[in-house]
Image 1 (cartoon, rainbow, N blue to C red):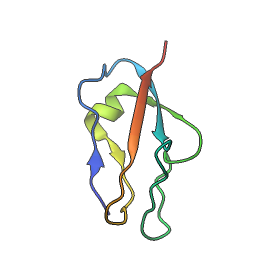
Image 2: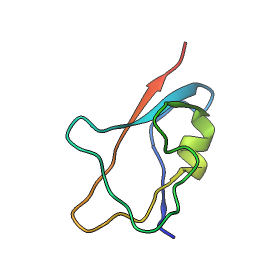
Image 3: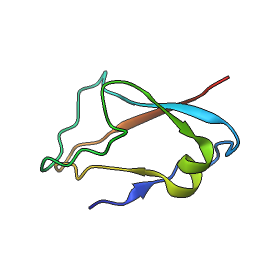
Length: 74
């Protein structure tokens, strides 16, 4: 299992819409384990989770990357 990525600098009291950007191509990962937040649709996540706990990443193939986009919700 890979590490979690924490998004430092976000307001822990706000909620954020989080999604993966794939305009440059979609990433490929090993095995069939896909974290629940990693889908086609954006997910609504508390800022405290993003800064303190982080997002679990899948184990990517070499030379692969994910671009994570977090937008503060009103």
